[in-house]
Image (cartoon, rainbow, N blue to C red; front, side, top):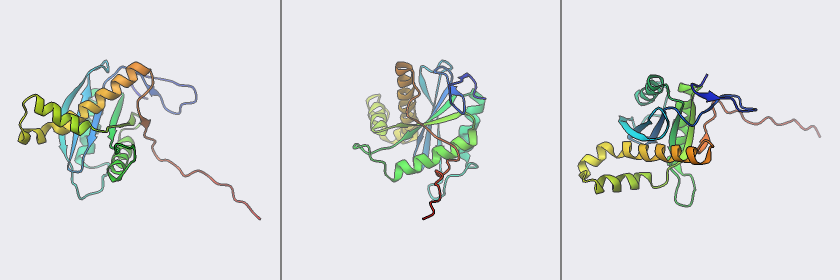
Length: 186
């Protein structure tokens, strides 16, 4: 069972409570930024930047996925938020498809802990701006920009959940099945 979860009518799994530690993930081609919240689910802070193999398909055994699963266990996380990169018009392109695939692999690896996708438009731009404004040089920005983006993604999700009372973004479902269709005999 999900730690700190409450049952919702008709829900198959427990819905995480607003409070509890959450993990934020900014998925990139080469790196994955990771952030975490405090145990009350109020403030996001950077954790790590994990390397990825840009040429390999994501799998549950990848070191970055294993590291995220380890953090979920170590922190007793109630959920993981993965950034979903959309264009300014809201259209999902190849990067969004890769983020969805990554989130599905993480969800399968850490079940029954929930994984949710949240719109992350402009978080990398905001992260670069924030780092530049705080005096971090361009060369040093590369090492931490993914963590800063993960912090922005997670903080947005925490703020949304706290103000609306509803989980942010969309839930990643494990093992989606195609809808059944009835055979029609003419």
